[in-house]
Image (tube, rainbow over all chains, first blue to last red; front, top):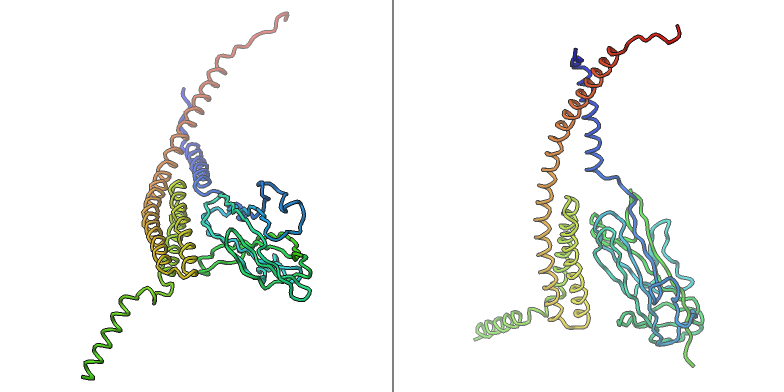
Length: 205
Length: 163
């Protein structure tokens, strides 16, 4: 005698299968949200961490080429339009505020912008030199040449030429705001990324 | 005669305006190129959200970056006083952006159709697979019951030796 067909057993198996397969289909079609962020970094002239300064000294002589690479990686999960702003600061001008996601008030020298695919890394060759130094009382003021573009004398002085800093800020385009914003929005929170490299200069003679 | 002089003056002014159109441009071409770039970028992001192929999107992003470089060159030329060159370069950038916008719109439509097809396929496959799995499970269970029953029925009482 063969086992009889039990319709209730069959229906419960069918319902379980529908639930299981639906869950699998949903999980495949809706991948899990991962954390969204950007990565910003600076490498020396040999594409490595270190060797940021020529002759291994933070005092940069006039007309000496300095080569860095500024990298941005997009881990936002979508295409992003980003900008890296380069500013010249000193020891008294405040840097960007990570807590309030406020950029530095230091004057902007140059900016670089690009559209990045998700998971794409963009490396900006950053070649610069100090073109001129002028003394105003006890502070030195400098003009720079960055990637072939001259900045003119920047209105940021450092006492005896010590503790200048180049500040690199990452900005991203916010379509709702219709403009670039410092940092990015992730899960309703504003995050930011910036780096700074200190250097000194001296007046010739 | 005075009326005639006014007419001549107006004609000269109009001719000057027509032939020096670029001088009154004031970076307008660059602004338009910038706006077109942003529209194209928005369109590409929409195509991405619709599920377009990453390879196709990568090509469009490459073109957008070319348009961006041209835009930066146009701004540089404009700042240096080379307005003619600035306008030409900005127009090139604008053309690329318009191309990208059109291509990304087509990609978006394609992606939405694919997504709809996939959803319909899933809606058909899930119940079919469930039905097939249930029938298979029922068959296997029935067979196992039958096998257990037959195995039970084949059992013989065996007396222990030595009794």
